[in-house]
Image 1 (cartoon, each protein chain N blue to C red):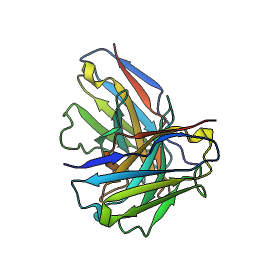
Image 2: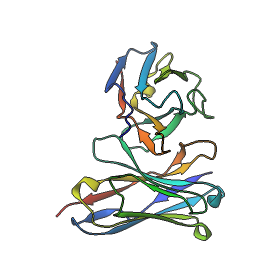
Image 3: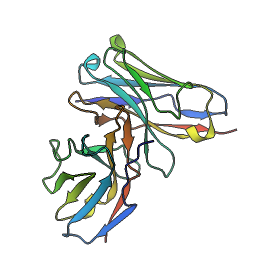
Length: 107
Length: 119
């Protein structure tokens, strides 16, 4: 079955840039999407269609795509950005797939 | 304001059944696909099932195919997940999520309802 691969954890100091990658064979043909989730809360969309930002999401969140990898970049990380981040895409059959998630720790 | 509210979770024995409703408001329900996504305790997100706005197109994850049934009642702005033959590995928080018209992603999520399968 199709898989999206994320690093289990990323750690950065406040004010630095965090980059979270997501790799999948179908990503050159399918969009990647990103969600964040804080403990006890529902997930929320932060990036759609590789690099589009929904209204209400701070400009420090950006997304990019290159080959089989999509990347979520958080510039000038703040303590409130500490959360789990999940990428999502679809496989060749249009079935939704999530990555395993990345825990972002702000040191 | 878009709101999605799940209910119906609880403790059920292995082999048992449970029906989860999700009540939607703040948007034209029938125009959007709807989805169920679950999250086992301490684990990541797992897509469970999707249903198109008309109800005519349905998909299931292999892990639930043949046991779970998704449905919707557009007159009542409600989404449902009928879960039969429940197993321990079905223990999770179940979220309903709205599918975005322009792509295969979810722009609004409910707060989730916990289903625990245990004897």
